[in-house]
Length: 314
Image (cartoon, rainbow, N blue to C red; front, side):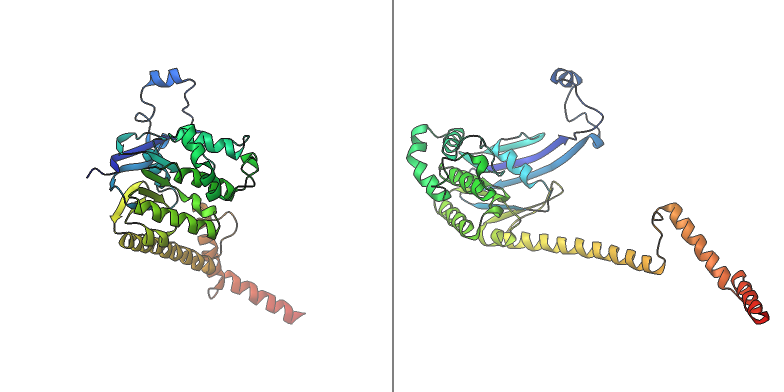
């Protein structure tokens, strides 16, 4: 069976903005050559590197990893929002994406108008949207506010409307980023029920989340990304356990470094501004001076003896 999503040796590189090398015009960029491949390492950022994974049709697939590991970039590649620098992304079927909060909404127009605009962008006709409009508004729980400009909506209202549109356009593949985190408990349960319904209907779900319990309970397979690279994929419980073990190991290492610094500072507290190499030299000199003063016959002992003699004469 052809997979719903096939990510084949995909790499995505972005140019770092704010660097001294800037293109004045598109023409100058094109005449210069490739916009990315000719950049030096310090001029680019590799969001994904040689990632390969397949998502079977009708499965729920979770993507986990630390912030900045490339999870959202992967979803944007599958959604067609951006293109890979190298490699191939193949998608079979209609895709509905809920990737960024409020994405695709025009803040100055009403929720009603935004529903129609988003539905048309996702491939529905105006007649199909009209037929499903009441279901969308009821699912989003926005009956009283559907004619208000969306710029007056809260983040939760944005999310509810976006999710309602995404799941009611009858997609073959649903892409969901961490936007569900802004919803309340009741609406989150409603979303999970909708996910379960999608699974029963043989739909494919690609879910990016930091909710590891949801991945273990809901997903059929999982992918762990780390610094843009694939670390592990397969059984959700196994992948989550490996990820948690790695996070715990990293935290233990950070705590060990912090403890070492604290102990070093307690033994020899540094003055402000003395944490560099010159500061280390100055601290060593202070230690030598302190030892010399404390040594028998040292300058410190001679000063104490002189002060004692002066006191006796007085």
